[in-house]
Image 1 (tube, one colour):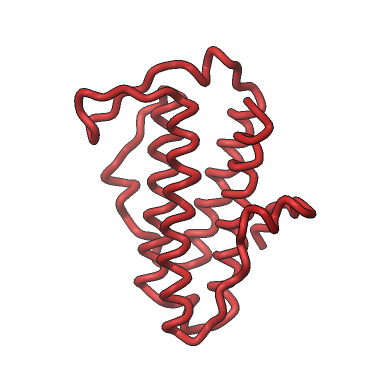
Image 2 (cartoon, one colour):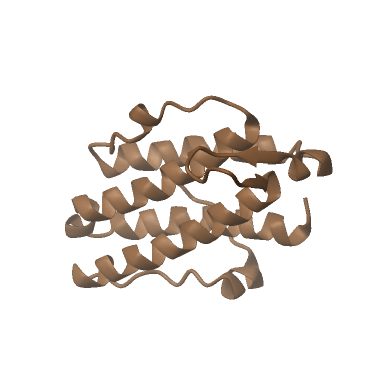
Length: 159
């Protein structure tokens, strides 16, 4: 995997974890159903592409169930981050070029590498939507710019 791809994936996980921590900082945001649903969507999309890329079945009906608490959601993010990190540590160029088909976009194929870029960009877009919701609830969203992250490359903190 290229350095840029690795940076995008590492930033995605840092930004997701940092955003979830920001949600925990206030009761209004920690308990907000709309925020939890939006971040759950980010998680499910990530899990979908991860499973598709690894040729692992995914139980979509189970995945659609939004966790009852922010802690449960964070736990699922942490688990998925761990699974994805382990998989990416062993990925090859051949793996990245493998073709994927999804029933959600019939008649098209994508490479695993394109799926990885998709989930990084998809997560970014929905975190921006969630940041608007944080502001509506009186919180200040964290700074998650990729270019700022590159300076020190802080790691992922799930606590």
